[in-house]
Image 1 (tube, rainbow, N blue to C red):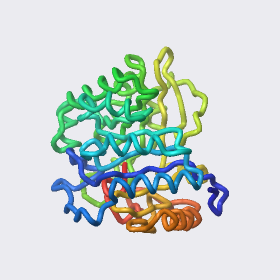
Image 2: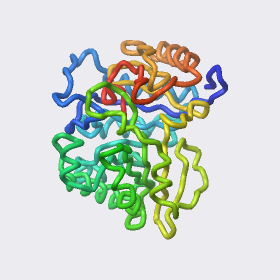
Image 3: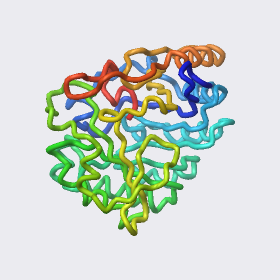
Image 4: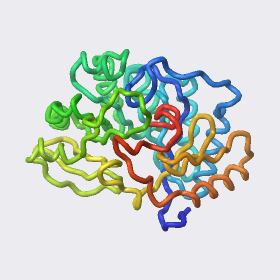
Length: 317
């Protein structure tokens, strides 16, 4: 389906849970979240019905997110059923990676073709700080498990945070020299006012170009990242700039939260509920949400915060 600004919406990000085994500072509060009633969340059947409705409207790519999607007990069923929906050509998953040693192979067998793994630092101490409870070795083992499982693509997502990991840009980028992975540096987004990040934390993607002058531009892959490559690397490096140089004019996505709310824009408070609807009702509500997608998300910076109305774990990372 095409929205009112001529953008073809072919990509849905579906959160399957708000829960997570970590507490990353840019994503959710330290004490976690108030667990919602089971009946307020989408059931597995409703999720698959939503995927079918999205596919009818032209969505071909599905990304499964959370929270941490791998803490969901029926995650393999959800992935397998979603991958079998007519029209869905690609099922991806975004995870912190810590549960991949047990689940990488079953996910691949269920039909997941690509996996994105969050990794913001190569320091064990800093990893514990940013995640509030995680261990770096668990994430590294998850990356190894993903590579061993033979996914079509393994990407590492790194949130750029001034004063935290801008001194690690080179060692993180050099992971693409050692492993067949792509790496994405993503600008920190002002999603909620936790007080954890001051103005200095919001640095532009251009710092990566300053730190890595040998980067060579790479051919675009149809995504929102500006692509580069280190000479001799096994994977590319993408720079994603939702704050300093937004890409709203090319946005092809819609989001579905775990409690059944369609968000046509990550940073808008507008939501359209599909919880409890039948198939035709879901299709109609998706049409409304897509048609209501705004032209852009408005100013974003340390002062102008996101109007999403939720923490990132409640939307889908």
